[in-house]
Image (tube, rainbow, N blue to C red; front, side, top):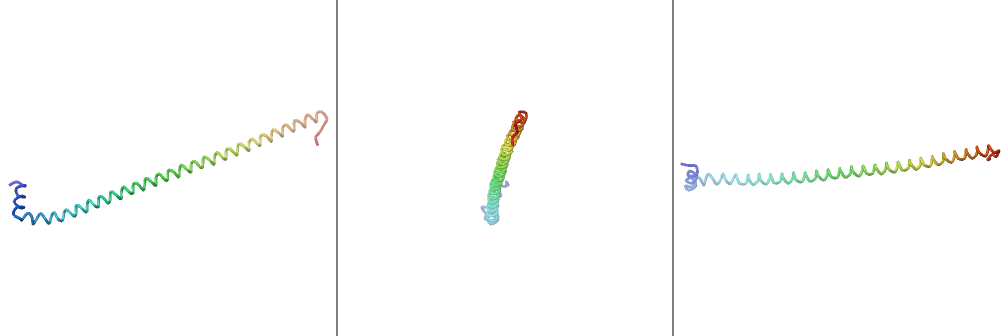
Length: 113
């Protein structure tokens, strides 16, 4: 007899039904529970991935903002240094011009107080 024929015979006589139904009853909830657990695990994994992505994105944004603020501060420092260098150069030029004027006046016999 083939496997299908034996199964049909068991089901028809009731013996197979008494053996099959409890086995099916046990396996169906287990399968459903397993499927439910798999679904919950997938949901948890997805939420974790979303949270990780959000955390990575936030960290990247904070890093970008920090770099931008550092560039702005560096630019301000460079600008202040340039302004101060120009002021110093103008003061030195004025000093040199004043010395030249004094030298010219001294050569003519006039001195400034």
